[in-house]
Image (cartoon, rainbow, N blue to C red; front, side, top):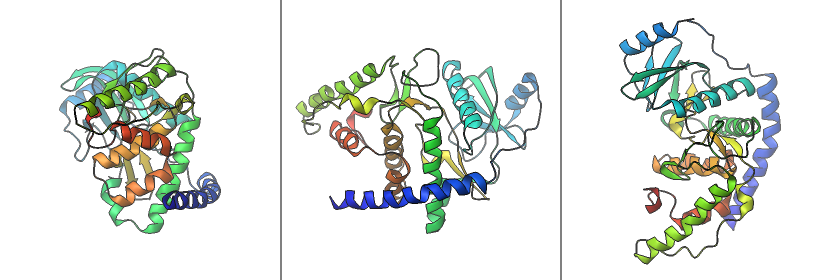
Length: 311
């Protein structure tokens, strides 16, 4: 009870700060857009990619082909197109600091058959590296920035079909689902049915003595709507802080339309999985839109790290 009172008190204080911070961002912060250079042909890009070295310090397979441009190696065309569309949507319709998607190419390589050509973010470090060194005020600015960013993301576009931006339903990725892609889910009802099945799975694990019985009812239908646009992979590796104090969001490969609590649980599970600092984990509920009832239900089903349903 005390924890909830503290949460609501802090959340109210942050909500009061949201408005002046929004005004500050809109009228005093310059829109962050990197200059566009190198009008290269597709063949020139491919030749540069084939001779470039991997970029150090990144999880994804990235190569830097010029001072301003990196190329991401993607696994397949089906998932590359939605990622590029997500990047374009965010770049065109929000003030979020995110790399511009310059081009998408089909090209066979060791990682797959697709490439995304995008901005290189100069003079930046992963948030997981710099977070421990930041002052209280710098951390507060990041919290307020994330709140502002996530409101913008949720308002960009809507859909009645869960998952990536696509004319047809595609498999969905995210730690709120599994360690591997699941679906596709052509309707909200099919996504809800997936979570209903988790009760039977959890009871099975309990019958084997692997975990306690959840003794839970299904999640109410109301928690699965509306579907909002979601980054869906906001771990600290996908947040970059540059030398001007600008917070960048990168890697939109898991983005799509999901229930509002997906962003919160995705951030929380990623922080647990990566063993991020407690100070960061504590701040997540103030940045994303938490649903504590869903979180408790998911915990009973075994979600979190490490849990048996993740396999």
